[in-house]
Length: 527
Ligand code: ZN
Image 1 (spheres, helix red, strand yellow):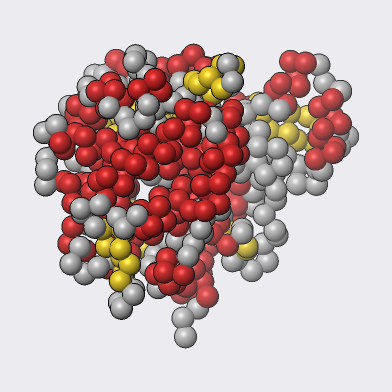
Image 2 (image 1 turned 45 degrees about the vertical axis):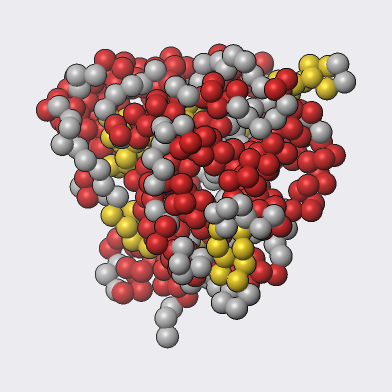
């Protein structure tokens, strides 16, 4: 019988992730090696942040050559620790404690109350540091709390990472890359990441790098402390060109949105930057659990307010997930005649359109004479609503570009069928999070209007190509009009009616249990 551990591991299907580096200059190729080495240092930093015993346990598992030991090592590497992220952090290595809520950012015996009381007694500048991204909290010999800046706590490893970054800076011929990694190397020693975050916003280079302390999810006590990670990638020139060709038509699309003309924005502002890259190496938190397919950074509020945030999309990771997860889902959920239409190019093109459409439609609105925003008016419904808007209006926008002859007509049927397959992937694990809920809303609306058809006989779904275009247009109009009017009650009613899992949908979801949850990436270029 298969062991429980191997069942857990099997949910992550091993997948090679690679990229075309042949277009890189000799200097950039040499720089890439140093950057990959710097990303490797993020692994050691992150292991130290997860738990005080993480590195010793990894060394022990590495030395254990028994099949059971090797299996544990494999799953440890997927989670970057002895707790299974997909299973509420349950331990899978015998003898390890429960996952510490505050990771290794705080003393394991410290309570929330002790921290809060200690912080209340600090001077304002210290208070800011103690609750900031880049300090750990430790105990002094007298058992009271103290803080240590990351630059001191992790000095040994940060010096090594900074050294690799400086070497890479000397090798690259790209000025924006040199500027970012030099400033980031400095930040490792000063804990002041502002200048390097600004340089990262301006990074425009064939090698794309994100490296440092970023997300705060692992701090389960306060969400204050940032975990180290790295994404090293090669800019995808074809998708980058596609993005700028779409961007040139955004105002036209805004001008033809299916809403009252008074709700359209006659002057779209500057777009937040979007980068499309192929991953070649990752490090630290990026390695743990479900693989990141896109991210928005930085988290520094000052920069987000001045410059917005930058979105980085990992094309080859999306493609791997498409092949390993979406295609098998389509084999089960879709009508057999339409399965051959499921393809990666329309899948990724729709993701790009989704991202662009977040910038279109109503944002700053007037409700009862008062200036406000859609986010403020829709409150807790906003994320689900805005995600549904970006999905459905992404289809609307692509249909517009197809009709205008800018996108190939051969994309038309493929994009609708691929979108349908994607719905099952998004709501496979329930509709508790924003994107799943928004997808269920679209699915049930389109089903009710005959744009999606259910075949009771074989339990599969199909697109009705005569109805999907008009239904997409109508739903885009409904969702955007609710946004324009800031109509919370209408959003609430529509979600209650449509964001549900009915029997036909549930019967298909039940059949998807054996399909992998995610990929376990293998990076040949990082070796
Ligand atoms: Zn979105």
